[in-house]
Length: 341
Image (cartoon, rainbow, N blue to C red; front, side, top):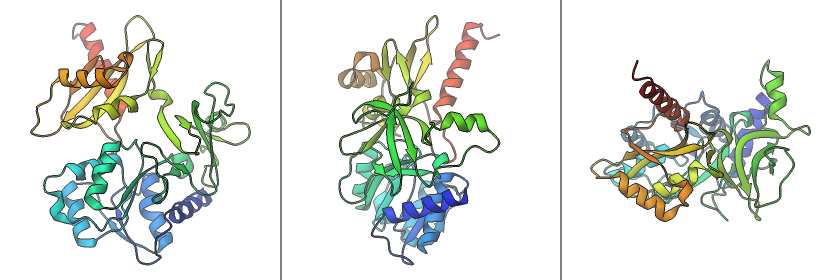
């Protein structure tokens, strides 16, 4: 609703406490047609009276030139954008220290990406969280104060959040893994013309079920573990893609990584597959990756298969589309089993 969008713009604007009305410059490279771009790159700057530097697409060099010319102070984005800037040859000559605050959303932010970007800009890059059904922002790490790398932070002002049991929707205590549920003025009224889908997305007392598996610690900070649909069942164990991807990003020759679960013939188990985009000019072998994973992960979480790619499929906001990787692999398996007919 319009009320929800307005509420979220004000919640997000007041989260960054040091912002000055009429003085800030926001880099608007997120598409305004996406809920995250609409709120973080358009509605928040309008509420703030800020200048918006609009770019039609994320092209790394164009973005760096825009930063050099317009000196933006705020840069809402997604992990792949910050990753591309970190890895761009000669990035330091563009002088991007004007950027003082960035909130990353739409996908998990690897620790290594955040640390490298902050060294470049000397600003703060924190991970937040949201979903379209909540206009979209519900959580963020504080830009100042206690920040927990790898977490999505705490709920925004006037936002409630809790972890509920995956089967019963009963509230769980801190430390236990379940589904993230949220409630606040930014939450949708429902899906237009879809009363059944709306009913399935809310608890009886009005909490929105996000579809994300998460945990809350004793300080009230939340960590997203996985999408419910992306959790991998490796035998009797549950494996979360982010846990494996964080290990993969420790390798200096890995530019991008995505982990999925693929069905194994004859049972309900899944095998873990990692898709890797190597950095240009590096030599990377599957054995290196497997050795790293065996050293850092439990045996059941080590990928069965590694596939090198030139790029990963992404949405128009830069989110890796794991489902497309699964679909392509399934199609190739079916063709192989049918003899290519």
